[in-house]
Length: 196
Image 1 (cartoon, helix red, strand yellow):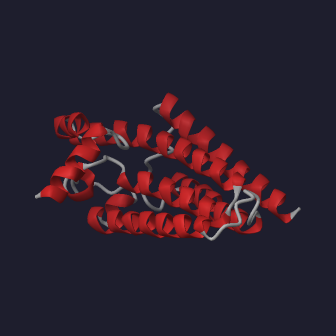
Image 2: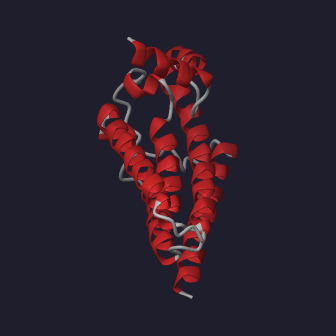
Image 3: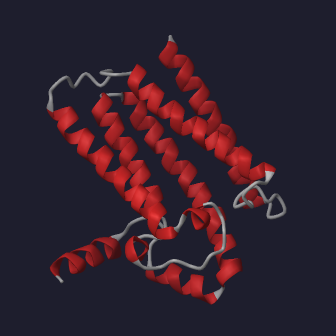
């Protein structure tokens, strides 16, 4: 019962946030995201996003074991994926800078982990949620990882338009060089970096 209530609230936050992000993408005058820190839209976007993320973690714990995979290997696979991906997310915050992460314009960052993906924190956060789903053995958390990817896609689409307006050809060139999330270039660059 509690798990279903948490899931309902989590999905409601995702649907509302997704609808607002989609409206912002379609209606350029609706400046929902990216929005300046301290603005009403910024507070709503992060409030809904945090409700979704917190609900996802709580739901995973309440839905523990629904996957039916009770072998220790579930935790052995899920925990490193969850923790490793979360570490990459934190590394992304440190590399990009907290202000830039939250819609400041402190310069276009294209190096480090941003050479592999224009949105490495989004990729790693989805992978961390998949790791959480494995760790908790929760079917529903896999579904929420998919919903998180959908939200991140809408965030990225809105941010790309804003970044192009802010940085012009520099961002257009970066878009040609690095994928939105991951593709063969990402893995080739990683292989080359490891070989060097």
